Image (cartoon, rainbow, N blue to C red):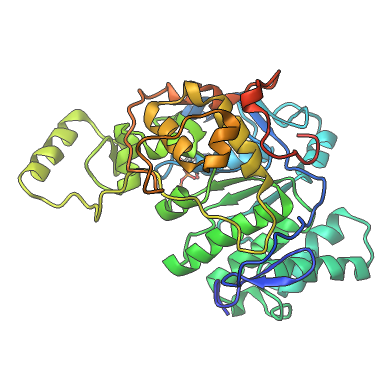
Length: 417
Ligand SMILES: Nc1ncnc2c1ncn2[C@@H]1O[C@H](COP(=O)(O)OP(=O)(O)OP(=O)(O)O)[C@@H](O)[C@H]1O
Protein backbone atom coordinates (compact mmCIF):
# COMPACT_ATOMS: atom_id res chain seq x y z
CA UNK A 1 0.00 0.00 0.00
CA UNK A 2 1.26 3.49 -0.76
CA UNK A 3 0.18 6.92 0.37
CA UNK A 4 -3.35 7.60 -0.61
CA UNK A 5 -4.59 4.16 -1.50
CA UNK A 6 -6.57 3.99 1.70
CA UNK A 7 -5.67 6.87 3.90
CA UNK A 8 -7.92 6.68 6.91
CA UNK A 9 -8.12 9.46 9.39
CA UNK A 10 -9.32 8.93 12.89
CA UNK A 11 -12.01 11.01 14.39
CA UNK A 12 -12.85 10.92 18.06
CA UNK A 13 -15.29 8.12 17.76
CA UNK A 14 -14.91 6.62 14.32
CA UNK A 15 -12.78 6.33 11.25
CA UNK A 16 -13.48 8.38 8.14
CA UNK A 17 -12.09 7.82 4.67
CA UNK A 18 -10.70 10.91 2.97
CA UNK A 19 -13.46 10.82 0.42
CA UNK A 20 -16.21 10.12 2.94
CA UNK A 21 -19.58 11.79 3.05
CA UNK A 22 -19.88 14.98 5.03
CA UNK A 23 -20.75 14.37 8.66
CA UNK A 24 -21.14 16.39 11.78
CA UNK A 25 -17.78 17.73 12.99
CA UNK A 26 -16.14 15.36 15.46
CA UNK A 27 -14.35 16.31 18.62
CA UNK A 28 -10.58 16.83 18.44
CA UNK A 29 -8.35 13.98 19.63
CA UNK A 30 -6.43 16.12 22.05
CA UNK A 31 -9.07 18.10 23.87
CA UNK A 32 -7.93 21.29 25.52
CA UNK A 33 -4.33 21.21 24.32
CA UNK A 34 -3.09 23.67 21.78
CA UNK A 35 0.17 23.74 19.88
CA UNK A 36 2.97 25.87 21.32
CA UNK A 37 3.88 29.23 19.89
CA UNK A 38 7.43 29.48 18.57
CA UNK A 39 9.05 32.90 18.86
CA UNK A 40 12.20 33.36 16.80
CA UNK A 41 14.14 36.59 17.05
CA UNK A 42 17.33 37.64 15.32
CA UNK A 43 18.44 34.05 14.73
CA UNK A 44 21.78 33.88 12.92
CA UNK A 45 23.75 30.81 11.88
CA UNK A 46 27.06 30.24 10.17
CA UNK A 47 29.46 27.35 9.75
CA UNK A 48 32.93 28.80 10.13
CA UNK A 49 33.15 31.57 7.55
CA UNK A 50 30.04 30.40 5.67
CA UNK A 51 27.05 32.50 6.70
CA UNK A 52 23.84 30.45 6.32
CA UNK A 53 21.21 33.01 7.31
CA UNK A 54 21.14 36.04 9.59
CA UNK A 55 18.67 37.91 11.70
CA UNK A 56 15.74 35.60 11.10
CA UNK A 57 12.72 36.84 13.05
CA UNK A 58 9.29 35.24 12.91
CA UNK A 59 6.52 33.78 15.04
CA UNK A 60 4.88 30.46 14.39
CA UNK A 61 1.38 31.09 15.73
CA UNK A 62 0.05 28.32 17.97
CA UNK A 63 -1.75 25.56 16.11
CA UNK A 64 -1.29 27.17 12.70
CA UNK A 65 0.39 25.51 9.73
CA UNK A 66 3.34 27.32 8.16
CA UNK A 67 5.55 26.56 5.18
CA UNK A 68 9.14 27.66 4.65
CA UNK A 69 10.23 27.92 1.04
CA UNK A 70 13.64 28.68 -0.38
CA UNK A 71 16.03 27.55 -3.08
CA UNK A 72 18.24 24.55 -2.34
CA UNK A 73 21.08 25.32 -0.01
CA UNK A 74 19.50 28.37 1.62
CA UNK A 75 19.58 26.65 4.98
CA UNK A 76 16.02 25.42 5.51
CA UNK A 77 17.12 22.14 7.08
CA UNK A 78 19.67 24.01 9.18
CA UNK A 79 16.79 26.22 10.33
CA UNK A 80 14.72 23.22 11.44
CA UNK A 81 17.70 21.70 13.21
CA UNK A 82 18.37 24.99 14.99
CA UNK A 83 14.76 25.08 16.15
CA UNK A 84 15.13 21.79 17.99
CA UNK A 85 18.60 22.53 19.32
CA UNK A 86 20.43 20.00 17.14
CA UNK A 87 22.48 22.95 15.86
CA UNK A 88 23.47 25.97 17.93
CA UNK A 89 22.79 29.35 16.31
CA UNK A 90 25.49 32.04 16.60
CA UNK A 91 23.04 34.54 18.05
CA UNK A 92 19.35 35.24 18.48
CA UNK A 93 16.68 33.26 20.25
CA UNK A 94 14.16 30.54 19.56
CA UNK A 95 11.66 30.50 22.39
CA UNK A 96 9.11 27.80 23.10
CA UNK A 97 6.94 28.07 26.21
CA UNK A 98 9.40 30.60 27.59
CA UNK A 99 12.46 28.37 27.04
CA UNK A 100 15.14 29.68 24.68
CA UNK A 101 16.28 26.57 22.83
CA UNK A 102 19.45 28.32 21.76
CA UNK A 103 20.66 29.07 25.26
CA UNK A 104 18.94 26.76 27.74
CA UNK A 105 20.50 24.01 29.86
CA UNK A 106 20.80 20.45 28.54
CA UNK A 107 18.03 19.36 30.88
CA UNK A 108 15.61 22.04 29.63
CA UNK A 109 16.56 21.24 26.07
CA UNK A 110 15.80 17.56 26.63
CA UNK A 111 12.42 18.43 28.15
CA UNK A 112 11.50 20.96 25.46
CA UNK A 113 12.49 18.59 22.65
CA UNK A 114 9.74 16.28 23.79
CA UNK A 115 7.27 18.91 22.58
CA UNK A 116 8.51 18.34 19.04
CA UNK A 117 7.64 15.68 16.52
CA UNK A 118 10.05 15.71 13.61
CA UNK A 119 9.53 14.13 10.22
CA UNK A 120 12.93 13.90 8.56
CA UNK A 121 13.33 13.84 4.78
CA UNK A 122 13.80 10.09 4.51
CA UNK A 123 11.55 9.16 7.43
CA UNK A 124 14.74 8.23 9.35
CA UNK A 125 13.40 4.81 10.26
CA UNK A 126 15.58 2.07 11.73
CA UNK A 127 16.02 -0.41 8.89
CA UNK A 128 16.19 -3.49 11.10
CA UNK A 129 12.99 -2.72 13.04
CA UNK A 130 9.47 -3.31 11.79
CA UNK A 131 7.07 -0.37 11.61
CA UNK A 132 5.51 -1.19 14.97
CA UNK A 133 8.87 -1.09 16.79
CA UNK A 134 9.97 2.00 14.87
CA UNK A 135 6.86 3.88 15.94
CA UNK A 136 7.08 2.52 19.50
CA UNK A 137 10.72 3.59 19.81
CA UNK A 138 10.24 7.14 21.24
CA UNK A 139 7.72 5.82 23.77
CA UNK A 140 10.13 3.12 24.98
CA UNK A 141 13.00 5.63 25.07
CA UNK A 142 11.30 8.62 26.65
CA UNK A 143 8.43 7.31 28.75
CA UNK A 144 7.78 4.67 31.38
CA UNK A 145 4.59 3.48 29.69
CA UNK A 146 3.70 -0.20 29.84
CA UNK A 147 3.74 -2.29 26.65
CA UNK A 148 -0.06 -2.37 26.76
CA UNK A 149 -0.23 1.44 26.78
CA UNK A 150 2.44 1.62 24.08
CA UNK A 151 0.49 -0.78 21.91
CA UNK A 152 -2.64 1.35 22.14
CA UNK A 153 -0.75 4.52 21.14
CA UNK A 154 1.24 2.88 18.33
CA UNK A 155 -1.85 1.33 16.75
CA UNK A 156 -3.71 4.63 17.03
CA UNK A 157 -0.92 6.54 15.26
CA UNK A 158 -0.55 3.86 12.59
CA UNK A 159 -4.28 4.10 11.96
CA UNK A 160 -4.12 7.90 11.87
CA UNK A 161 -1.50 7.76 9.14
CA UNK A 162 -3.25 5.03 7.16
CA UNK A 163 -0.81 2.25 8.08
CA UNK A 164 -3.05 -0.18 9.95
CA UNK A 165 -2.05 -3.71 9.04
CA UNK A 166 1.50 -2.81 8.06
CA UNK A 167 2.92 -3.16 11.60
CA UNK A 168 5.15 -6.12 10.76
CA UNK A 169 6.72 -4.69 7.61
CA UNK A 170 10.35 -3.61 7.56
CA UNK A 171 11.10 -0.14 6.13
CA UNK A 172 12.87 -1.79 3.20
CA UNK A 173 9.70 -3.67 2.27
CA UNK A 174 7.40 -0.66 1.86
CA UNK A 175 7.05 2.25 -0.55
CA UNK A 176 8.58 5.68 -0.05
CA UNK A 177 5.14 7.10 0.71
CA UNK A 178 4.54 4.53 3.42
CA UNK A 179 7.96 5.28 4.91
CA UNK A 180 7.02 8.98 5.07
CA UNK A 181 3.79 8.13 6.83
CA UNK A 182 5.56 5.78 9.22
CA UNK A 183 7.99 8.61 10.01
CA UNK A 184 4.98 10.83 10.63
CA UNK A 185 3.35 8.20 12.87
CA UNK A 186 6.57 8.02 14.89
CA UNK A 187 6.73 11.83 15.08
CA UNK A 188 3.24 11.81 16.61
CA UNK A 189 3.56 9.26 19.42
CA UNK A 190 4.68 11.71 22.09
CA UNK A 191 1.68 13.97 21.31
CA UNK A 192 3.84 16.81 19.98
CA UNK A 193 2.79 20.41 20.28
CA UNK A 194 5.04 21.32 17.37
CA UNK A 195 5.55 19.21 14.24
CA UNK A 196 8.44 19.91 11.90
CA UNK A 197 8.37 18.27 8.47
CA UNK A 198 11.47 18.43 6.29
CA UNK A 199 10.35 17.98 2.68
CA UNK A 200 7.53 15.52 3.46
CA UNK A 201 6.79 15.31 -0.28
CA UNK A 202 10.29 14.45 -1.50
CA UNK A 203 10.24 11.29 -3.56
CA UNK A 204 6.43 11.18 -3.71
CA UNK A 205 4.35 11.39 -6.87
CA UNK A 206 1.90 14.32 -7.21
CA UNK A 207 -1.13 12.27 -6.19
CA UNK A 208 0.52 10.86 -3.06
CA UNK A 209 1.73 14.38 -2.26
CA UNK A 210 -1.88 15.58 -2.47
CA UNK A 211 -2.92 12.84 -0.02
CA UNK A 212 -0.05 13.74 2.27
CA UNK A 213 -1.12 17.40 2.16
CA UNK A 214 -4.62 16.37 3.20
CA UNK A 215 -3.19 14.17 5.94
CA UNK A 216 -1.23 17.11 7.40
CA UNK A 217 -4.35 19.32 7.43
CA UNK A 218 -6.39 16.50 8.98
CA UNK A 219 -3.75 15.94 11.64
CA UNK A 220 -3.73 19.62 12.44
CA UNK A 221 -7.51 19.58 12.78
CA UNK A 222 -7.29 16.64 15.17
CA UNK A 223 -4.39 17.62 17.41
CA UNK A 224 -4.13 21.42 16.94
CA UNK A 225 -0.33 21.19 16.80
CA UNK A 226 1.81 24.02 15.44
CA UNK A 227 3.24 22.74 12.16
CA UNK A 228 6.19 23.96 10.10
CA UNK A 229 6.79 22.33 6.73
CA UNK A 230 9.88 22.81 4.59
CA UNK A 231 9.06 22.02 1.00
CA UNK A 232 9.83 22.70 -2.63
CA UNK A 233 6.37 21.57 -3.66
CA UNK A 234 4.43 24.54 -4.91
CA UNK A 235 1.02 22.84 -4.85
CA UNK A 236 1.53 21.96 -1.21
CA UNK A 237 2.79 25.47 -0.43
CA UNK A 238 -0.21 27.08 -2.13
CA UNK A 239 -2.91 24.91 -0.62
CA UNK A 240 -1.82 23.74 2.84
CA UNK A 241 -0.38 26.49 5.06
CA UNK A 242 -1.85 29.43 6.91
CA UNK A 243 1.49 31.24 6.69
CA UNK A 244 4.34 31.13 4.21
CA UNK A 245 7.94 32.27 4.52
CA UNK A 246 10.87 32.28 2.17
CA UNK A 247 14.62 32.20 2.75
CA UNK A 248 16.88 33.67 0.08
CA UNK A 249 20.28 35.36 0.00
CA UNK A 250 20.92 34.40 3.61
CA UNK A 251 17.83 36.24 4.81
CA UNK A 252 14.18 35.69 5.51
CA UNK A 253 12.68 37.51 2.53
CA UNK A 254 9.16 37.22 3.87
CA UNK A 255 7.06 35.48 6.46
CA UNK A 256 3.39 36.16 7.00
CA UNK A 257 -0.17 35.15 6.12
CA UNK A 258 -0.30 32.96 2.99
CA UNK A 259 -2.14 35.66 1.07
CA UNK A 260 0.90 37.96 1.28
CA UNK A 261 3.38 35.65 -0.40
CA UNK A 262 0.85 34.27 -2.87
CA UNK A 263 0.03 37.76 -4.14
CA UNK A 264 3.57 39.11 -4.03
CA UNK A 265 5.31 40.18 -7.20
CA UNK A 266 8.70 40.11 -5.54
CA UNK A 267 10.85 38.73 -8.39
CA UNK A 268 12.37 35.98 -6.26
CA UNK A 269 8.94 34.84 -5.04
CA UNK A 270 7.41 34.89 -8.52
CA UNK A 271 10.34 33.01 -9.98
CA UNK A 272 10.23 30.37 -7.26
CA UNK A 273 6.47 29.82 -7.37
CA UNK A 274 6.58 29.53 -11.16
CA UNK A 275 9.70 27.37 -11.30
CA UNK A 276 11.24 29.40 -14.10
CA UNK A 277 14.84 30.19 -14.88
CA UNK A 278 14.19 33.90 -15.44
CA UNK A 279 14.78 35.79 -12.21
CA UNK A 280 17.32 36.33 -9.45
CA UNK A 281 17.68 32.65 -8.47
CA UNK A 282 20.34 30.78 -10.43
CA UNK A 283 21.80 27.30 -10.42
CA UNK A 284 24.10 28.30 -7.57
CA UNK A 285 21.38 30.28 -5.79
CA UNK A 286 22.25 33.80 -6.98
CA UNK A 287 22.86 35.17 -10.46
CA UNK A 288 24.91 38.12 -11.53
CA UNK A 289 23.26 40.85 -13.58
CA UNK A 290 25.05 39.85 -16.80
CA UNK A 291 23.58 36.34 -16.57
CA UNK A 292 20.14 37.74 -15.82
CA UNK A 293 20.34 40.06 -18.82
CA UNK A 294 21.45 37.22 -21.10
CA UNK A 295 18.59 34.98 -19.98
CA UNK A 296 16.08 37.79 -20.42
CA UNK A 297 17.41 38.40 -23.94
CA UNK A 298 17.05 34.70 -24.78
CA UNK A 299 13.50 34.60 -23.35
CA UNK A 300 12.54 37.73 -25.30
CA UNK A 301 13.76 35.94 -28.40
CA UNK A 302 11.38 33.06 -27.64
CA UNK A 303 13.59 30.62 -25.69
CA UNK A 304 11.54 28.57 -23.15
CA UNK A 305 12.13 29.80 -19.59
CA UNK A 306 11.29 26.48 -17.93
CA UNK A 307 7.86 27.29 -16.49
CA UNK A 308 4.73 25.55 -17.68
CA UNK A 309 2.03 27.92 -16.49
CA UNK A 310 1.74 31.27 -14.84
CA UNK A 311 1.19 30.48 -11.19
CA UNK A 312 -0.04 33.46 -9.25
CA UNK A 313 -2.80 34.47 -6.93
CA UNK A 314 -4.58 32.90 -4.02
CA UNK A 315 -6.10 29.46 -4.40
CA UNK A 316 -8.50 28.01 -1.82
CA UNK A 317 -6.84 26.41 1.19
CA UNK A 318 -7.34 22.71 1.93
CA UNK A 319 -9.99 22.00 4.55
CA UNK A 320 -10.12 19.05 6.95
CA UNK A 321 -11.81 15.94 5.59
CA UNK A 322 -15.57 16.14 6.20
CA UNK A 323 -16.41 14.72 9.60
CA UNK A 324 -13.21 15.92 11.26
CA UNK A 325 -13.11 18.75 13.79
CA UNK A 326 -12.85 22.36 12.70
CA UNK A 327 -9.22 23.51 12.65
CA UNK A 328 -8.86 25.62 15.77
CA UNK A 329 -5.67 27.15 14.37
CA UNK A 330 -7.64 28.41 11.39
CA UNK A 331 -10.30 29.89 13.66
CA UNK A 332 -7.68 31.71 15.73
CA UNK A 333 -5.92 32.80 12.56
CA UNK A 334 -9.03 34.50 11.26
CA UNK A 335 -9.13 36.72 14.34
CA UNK A 336 -5.41 37.33 14.07
CA UNK A 337 -5.29 38.33 10.41
CA UNK A 338 -8.37 40.54 10.71
CA UNK A 339 -6.54 42.46 13.44
CA UNK A 340 -3.54 43.07 11.19
CA UNK A 341 -5.53 43.51 7.98
CA UNK A 342 -4.81 47.23 7.75
CA UNK A 343 -1.05 46.52 7.77
CA UNK A 344 -1.13 44.11 4.82
CA UNK A 345 -0.62 44.92 1.14
CA UNK A 346 -3.88 45.52 -0.66
CA UNK A 347 -3.99 42.31 -2.74
CA UNK A 348 -3.41 40.21 0.39
CA UNK A 349 -6.04 42.21 2.25
CA UNK A 350 -8.55 41.69 -0.54
CA UNK A 351 -7.76 37.99 -0.63
CA UNK A 352 -8.36 37.60 3.10
CA UNK A 353 -11.60 39.55 2.98
CA UNK A 354 -12.78 37.45 0.04
CA UNK A 355 -12.11 34.28 2.03
CA UNK A 356 -14.49 35.34 4.82
CA UNK A 357 -18.13 34.32 4.74
CA UNK A 358 -20.76 37.07 4.71
CA UNK A 359 -21.49 36.21 8.35
CA UNK A 360 -17.82 36.55 9.26
CA UNK A 361 -17.57 39.86 7.42
CA UNK A 362 -20.58 41.15 9.32
CA UNK A 363 -19.08 39.94 12.58
CA UNK A 364 -15.81 41.74 11.93
CA UNK A 365 -17.57 44.82 10.58
CA UNK A 366 -15.95 44.47 7.15
CA UNK A 367 -17.95 45.73 4.14
CA UNK A 368 -18.78 43.27 1.37
CA UNK A 369 -15.99 43.23 -1.23
CA UNK A 370 -16.95 44.42 -4.68
CA UNK A 371 -14.69 42.02 -6.58
CA UNK A 372 -15.62 38.65 -5.17
CA UNK A 373 -19.17 38.07 -6.30
CA UNK A 374 -18.04 34.85 -7.96
CA UNK A 375 -16.78 33.52 -4.66
CA UNK A 376 -13.20 32.75 -5.66
CA UNK A 377 -10.54 35.31 -5.03
CA UNK A 378 -9.24 36.76 -8.26
CA UNK A 379 -5.56 36.38 -9.05
CA UNK A 380 -4.22 39.34 -7.17
CA UNK A 381 -0.72 40.55 -7.44
CA UNK A 382 1.04 42.39 -4.72
CA UNK A 383 4.02 44.64 -4.61
CA UNK A 384 6.00 44.54 -1.44
CA UNK A 385 9.67 45.46 -1.32
CA UNK A 386 11.98 42.71 -0.07
CA UNK A 387 12.53 42.89 3.63
CA UNK A 388 9.29 44.69 4.35
CA UNK A 389 7.07 41.68 4.55
CA UNK A 390 9.18 40.07 7.23
CA UNK A 391 8.59 43.26 9.19
CA UNK A 392 4.83 43.01 8.98
CA UNK A 393 3.23 42.85 12.40
CA UNK A 394 1.70 39.52 11.53
CA UNK A 395 5.08 38.12 10.66
CA UNK A 396 6.50 38.47 14.13
CA UNK A 397 3.74 39.02 16.58
CA UNK A 398 0.16 40.02 16.69
CA UNK A 399 -1.64 42.45 18.90
CA UNK A 400 -2.60 40.76 22.11
CA UNK A 401 -4.21 43.49 24.17
CA UNK A 402 -7.73 44.72 24.06
CA UNK A 403 -9.79 43.79 21.09
CA UNK A 404 -12.34 46.08 19.59
CA UNK A 405 -15.90 44.89 19.22
CA UNK A 406 -15.11 44.26 15.57
CA UNK A 407 -12.22 41.94 16.26
CA UNK A 408 -13.58 39.85 19.05
CA UNK A 409 -13.06 36.11 18.41
CA UNK A 410 -15.71 34.72 16.14
CA UNK A 411 -16.05 31.53 18.13
CA UNK A 412 -15.07 30.68 21.68
CA UNK A 413 -11.40 29.82 21.88
CA UNK A 414 -10.19 26.54 23.19
CA UNK A 415 -7.31 26.05 25.58
CA UNK A 416 -7.32 29.62 26.82
CA UNK A 417 -5.97 31.08 23.59
N1 LIG B 1 26.69 20.38 9.90
C1 LIG B 1 27.08 21.19 8.91
N2 LIG B 1 28.34 21.65 8.83
C2 LIG B 1 28.72 22.50 7.86
N3 LIG B 1 27.89 22.96 6.89
C3 LIG B 1 26.63 22.52 6.91
C4 LIG B 1 26.15 21.63 7.90
N4 LIG B 1 24.83 21.41 7.67
C5 LIG B 1 24.51 22.13 6.57
N5 LIG B 1 25.58 22.80 6.12
C6 LIG B 1 25.59 23.71 4.97
O1 LIG B 1 24.54 24.65 5.15
C7 LIG B 1 23.99 25.02 3.88
C8 LIG B 1 22.48 24.89 3.94
O2 LIG B 1 22.14 23.51 3.99
P1 LIG B 1 20.64 23.00 4.18
O3 LIG B 1 20.68 21.52 4.08
O4 LIG B 1 20.05 23.59 5.39
O5 LIG B 1 19.95 23.64 2.89
P2 LIG B 1 18.44 23.46 2.40
O6 LIG B 1 17.90 24.81 2.14
O7 LIG B 1 17.70 22.59 3.34
O8 LIG B 1 18.70 22.73 1.01
P3 LIG B 1 17.78 21.67 0.18
O9 LIG B 1 16.56 22.43 -0.22
O10 LIG B 1 18.65 21.33 -0.98
O11 LIG B 1 17.49 20.49 1.10
C9 LIG B 1 24.65 24.11 2.85
O12 LIG B 1 25.66 24.85 2.21
C10 LIG B 1 25.25 22.99 3.67
O13 LIG B 1 26.40 22.49 3.08
